[in-house]
Length: 231
Image (cartoon, rainbow, N blue to C red):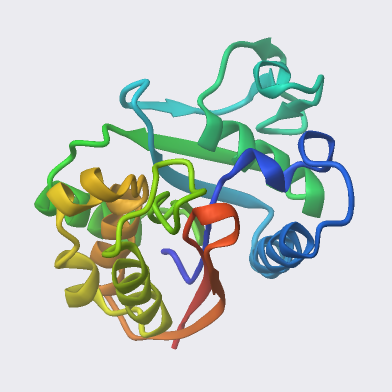
C-alpha cells in the first residue's frame, strides 16, 4: 500500500553535468527535488514510479541507460544490480538518476501513453493504492509556455494553469487533478497531465497530509514539487 508520494518534474537540467554552474534557479529546483526524493527514501528503498512519454507504454526495471543523447556521458541504473543496457525515455532516466542520488535500491517505472484517459489514469492510481509498493515517485512537468523566451513560446493561460496544478498538489485534491483538461495541456505543452491524474486516483483512496515545496517556472517551464503522506 502506497503511504508516501513524491511528485517532481523531470527536466534534464536537474543533472549537474547537463546544466553546469550555480544558476540560482537551477540550484533551487534541484535542491527541492532531491529533498523530496530523500524524504521518499526514508520510508522505502524500493520505489514505484509513474510517468507518461511519447515512446509508448511500458514498465522499466533493472535497466541501465544514460544521458548521452542529452549532451553528457552520465550513466544511470534503475537498480543496484541492473545489467541490461538499453535506451530509456527521459522520465525513466531521471527516475534512475534520482534513485542513485539518495541511495535507494531500486525503482520500477510505469510509463503510460500521453493520451491515456482521465478514467484510466485514476484506475491506475487505484491499483497502485492496493499494491505491495509503499513509495511512489510521480514524474510530471507543467506548461512550457511561460513567457516569450520559453520553449513553447508565450501563452497567457500558462500561469493560471500551473497555479491550478500547484493548488491541487498542495491539497492532494483528486477532483482538482481530475479536472485537468487534456486539450489545454496539449496547447500549453504540459506533459504532466497523465502522471498527475494517476496521483489523483491514488488520492481518492485515503486521507493525505500534502505539502507543496516548490512551484515556479524557471526558463519558461512550470515545475512543481510536492510530497504526500498517508494520514
